[in-house]
Picture: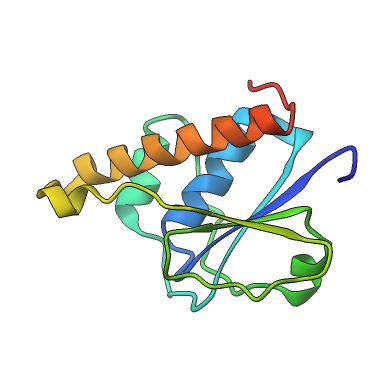
Length: 139
C-alpha cells in the first residue's frame, strides 16, 4: 500500500451506500486517503435520502453522480470495499477486496430518512474501523 491509500467503494447503483462511504471517508480522513465510488450497474441519480443524511453531517455530494467501475482505477486502488451482497467484483491481482454487510432497517419496518440515518451511521462505523486499520487519523 502506498503512503496515501486509495479505496474504491462499490455498490450496485452507486447512488446510495457507496457514495455515502466515499463521502464519509473523505470527510473523516481528508486528503490522507483517496476515496472513490462506483457501481456495478450504475443508476441515473443519487438517492435523495442518502444525500440528505450526509448533508446533516456537513458532507456535500452535490458534485457526485452514479458512475461505472473504471477498469484502470480498479487495477490501481489498494482496496475495494463492496457494500451489501449484490455488488460482485471479480478478483484483481494485487487488490484486496472486502465486503461490508450493512444494516437494512427496512427489514424492521424503518423507512425514509430514519432508515437512511441508520444506514449512514452503520457505514460511518465501518469507515472509522477501516481508517483505524489503515492507521489514518480522523478529522
